[in-house]
Amino acid sequence: MSRAPKNAGPSLFAAAGLDRHAPRPLADKLRPRRLDEVVGQDHLLGPDGALTRMLATRSLGSMVFWGPPGTGKTTVARLLAQETDLHFEQISAIFTGVADLKKAFEAARARRDGGQGTLLFVDEIHRFNRAQQDSFLPVMEDGTIVLVGATTENPSFELNAPLLSRARVLVFRSLDAAAIEKLLTRAEQLEGKALPLDAQARQALVGMADGDGRASLTLTEEIWRAARAGEVFDSAKLQEIVQRRAPIYDKAQDGHYNLISALHKSVRGSDPDAALYYLCRMLDAGEPPLYVARRVVRMAIEDIGLADPQALVIANAAKEAYDFLGSPEGELAIAQAVIYLATAPKSNAGYAAYGAAMRAAKQGGSLLPPKHILNAPTKLMQSEGYGRGYAYDHDADEAFSGQNYFPDALPRQQFYDPPERGFEREIRKRLDYWAKLRKEREGS
Image (spheres, rainbow, N blue to C red):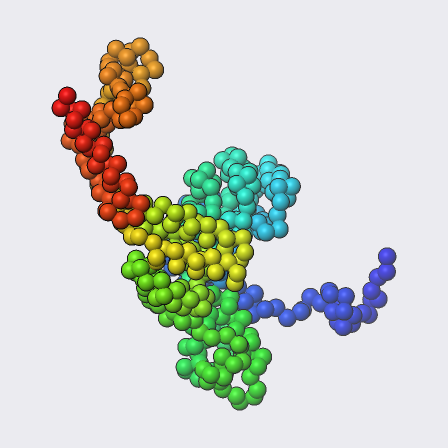
């Protein structure tokens, strides 16, 4: 094996990829070394924050960090391990298979046997399939690892229930303007020079970061590389230099909520053209298409419901199509779902019925179902009247017995009141007919 000569200069090591003093990205140089240096997550790391309270006990439970890119999820996980004397191990769900997980678990067991715990940080944890997610359960339960998973996707949709039941979900927020400004100031102090931007351009830079701290520092490096001696950029020049525009949404994110509200109300108002306009505004501004797809599913449930049962099927299919195709092809599937929903018959009867039933359930949560509809698997239960008098509906005329299913102490309720629109017109006919039969059989 050849060796580098003793007098090898820096250029030789650099050519071999061994230069220990290679330039580091600004985001890496500014990576917090203590938790109190993390910006923008005071609800977690402030004096009364969730992680601050956890650290006071010197004990960590498994967690899922949910939030946009560049908000400090990886850094906080690393610093938590440091604060609690845990070995920090990082893997990515994109590049890790079952065999790699087994090796990580075995190494963690060996460390535990030697007296040291392991914080296993899993980036993009939502990309693991159900079986891979299940593989974490035994090592979480026996204390082999403290799992910290990071995801940009809603854990309720992307992670399975057993994993979520064993981990606490902590939400990381997009960095606000003050937090981004703090990062820019730190960068200027570290580099010993000011950003060559006028006041409006600096404000535009904060907007371009769109709540992503890492992105703000990457843009900062681009600006310093592009600036000539004595040059100061205005907003127009800044956009030209970095080839990136500030998002349409304002820094308080009111624009985000305004546009999704406008999209939702346009669909509800059966205006497909306005709905498409607001959909395209959101996608053009960089709104994650999967967020929009999930909102479209919600619209199908809330505003169309059973007036057109296909609406939910099509909305879900659009989300799956986007998952499969990605951007920009998958965005067309979302657009088609928006058009379908906007032109579908509208009904909030199911939505209203659920709310009314939930209120009634909370008020009468201790009422027992009537005994005649309860199973009687034991002789004691049979002697107590369980199942006595139950009428098997399929044996009755028209498969409808008309018996009471509400608790004996609760008068019959009506929560669902379908309108005379779309498919619910047929549902109303059935309900009216069954109500007529019920009345006849109660009187007989």
